[in-house]
Amino acid sequence: MEELITRIQIDGQVLDEGVLKVDSFLTHQVDPQLMAKIGETFATAFKEQGITKVVTIEASGIAPAIFAAQSLRVPMIFARKSKSLTMNEELLSASVHSFTKQVTSQVSISRKFLTSQDKVLIIDDFLANGQAAKGLVELCQQAGSQVCGIGIVIEKSFQEGRQLLEELNLSVLSLARVATLSEGDVTFLKEESQ
Ligand code: 5GP
Image (cartoon, rainbow, N blue to C red; front, side):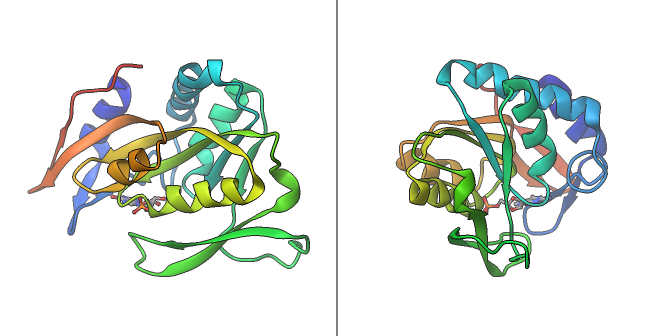
C-alpha cells in the first residue's frame, strides 16, 4: 500500500534490534484517515470470504481492526492481555510471547463472542515472529471458528512470522513488507498484489 509505505518512510524511526517505531500514526497517536484506508484495503481483499468477525489483540491492533470491521460491517473483538474483573464468563485463552516487551502473557476472549459458525479475519499492527497472530489463531481454534485470513499492517519480512503462519496454511496479507531495518533506513519488499 503505497500511502502506508510513504508514511513509514517519512515518520518511521528505526530503533535497535530490528524494531520500527511508528507511534505518530499507528501505535500511540493514530491517523484515522490512514486507518480508514487500511481497513478498507483489508475489507476489499477479504470481502468474498464471508467474514463474520474481525479479531485482533490490544492495544495497537485495535485501530486498523475497527476500520476493517466497519468496512466489512461485522463486529470487532480484541483479545485482552489482562483479565478484567468484568470478564467473569468462560474464556478462550492462549499464551503469547511479546516480541517488543519480551514477556509471555495470557490473552483472552470471552467464549460467548466466538462460535463455530464464525469466519474470522485476524488483524494486527505488526508481524514479527508471529506469536501474537498464532495466539489469536489458537483462540479461534478453541471456539471452533474458521480463520479465513490474516491482515497485517507492517510485516517485518526478515523475521519468521510469515513462514510460521503459512506453515499453518493461513493466508497472510501484509500492506507493507519491510525487508531491512538498518542504519536508520527502512527498505521494503515489492508490494503484494491486492
Ligand atoms: P510477533 O508476535 O509477530 O513476534 O510480534 C507482533 C507484535 O509485537 C505486534 O502485536 C506488535 O505489537 C509488536 N511488534 C513487533 N515488532 C514490532 C516493531 O518493530 N515495532 C512495533 N511498534 N511493534 C512491534
